[in-house]
Length: 229
Picture 1 (cartoon, rainbow, N blue to C red):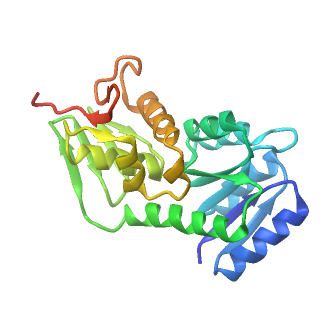
Picture 2: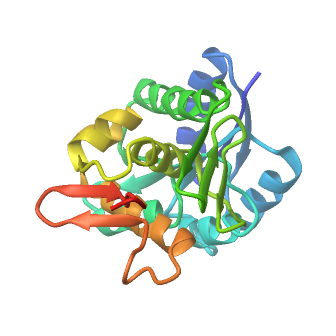
């Protein structure tokens, strides 16, 4: 049974979402503030975290920053309607998806299933992607190595990188990348791709301002650099 950590300070919403998740076959652990959420993430080892960004005290963005120092567990953030800056900030900190309040509990369950499928799907095929003699992606274990340096990515980041690295030099539009990761939220929010690319560059590029691997093709989209060109 997959375990979900649900973090929100609204008791009625927590109970409603918990009921839907449990009815859908998930185990649920809850937390109502940031410090409790971090302790639960450390001790309960959830398969996915649903995290409200508007927490009292230690807010959700601070929780994300702390969490990503030690864990790449999938995270879906809950944001207030119209707070686009929160969506971008959450994604850049390593969130896999977002849901805007108010939302349908059925929609959230669908998002949870979608993100878990992405994470599980990466573990299935015994595939190793190599680009030149410096970049290697081991798909089953989600391990990325660049110049003998191990780099940790979230499931969504790894999937985006694998999509591009399989065809180095090919230009992918944002819409193509959105469709490839099959995120429900991403269907209508192309800036999510920009946020993920920015976050990935911080992790893999020697100089994120002058990217060597994840290149922007202005007016079109992105590509993984072909080492033979």
